[in-house]
Amino acid sequence: MDIAESGKQIGEKLFALLDASQQQELMQYVLAQTKVGNADASPRSTFPQIIPVTPAARLTEVQAEDLYFCLENRLVYICETEVMLTVKEFDIFALLIMNPRRVLTYDMIIDLVWHESLDYYSHRAINNHVSNLRHKLKVTPETPDYIRSVHSIGYKFNPNIEPL
Image 1 (cartoon, rainbow, N blue to C red):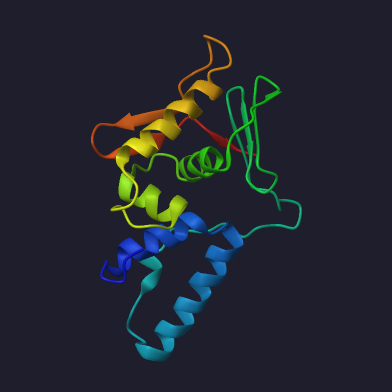
Image 2 (image 1 turned 90 degrees about the vertical axis):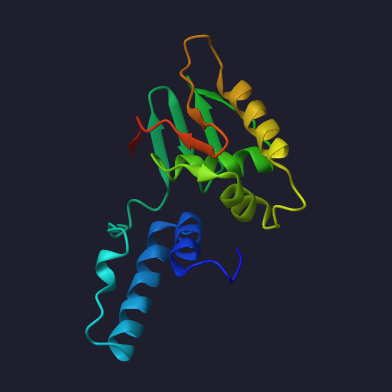
C-alpha cells in the first residue's frame, strides 16, 4: 500500500485482507471516530454491509460447484480431492475467492500478497502463479475455470459461489 493513494483505495485493499469480524470492528472504530470528528458525516454509505459473525460460523468457508475452500485451515478441495497449493498460490486464490465479482488488479495482488512495490515483481510473476493455480484446480476436464482473466488489468473469481 502506498500512503499517497486515496483513502478509498487503501480501504479497499484493507477490507480485502480482513475477516468479517475485523471488518466489523474497523467499521465501529471509524463510525466512532466520525461521530467525534464530524456529527454530520455518514460513513455507512461508503462501507459494505457486514453480517455479524455468529459463534457457529467461525471458519471462512466457500462452496462453488465441486470446489470447497477454507481460509483458516488453508484447505482447497476439488471433487472431494485436496489440492496442494504453494503459499503464494493459496494467498492469491484466497484473495480472489474472498472478493467475488471484484476485479483485482496486478497492483492490488502484488500489494496484498507480496507486500512489495510493483517495481520488484512483474505481472509475469502473477501470471505464472495464476497459471499454476489454474492447472492445479483443473482436476478433471469438466472442472470449471474458477479464475477469470481481465485483459491487461488482473483477475477475478468466477462469481457463481455460495458461502457456507
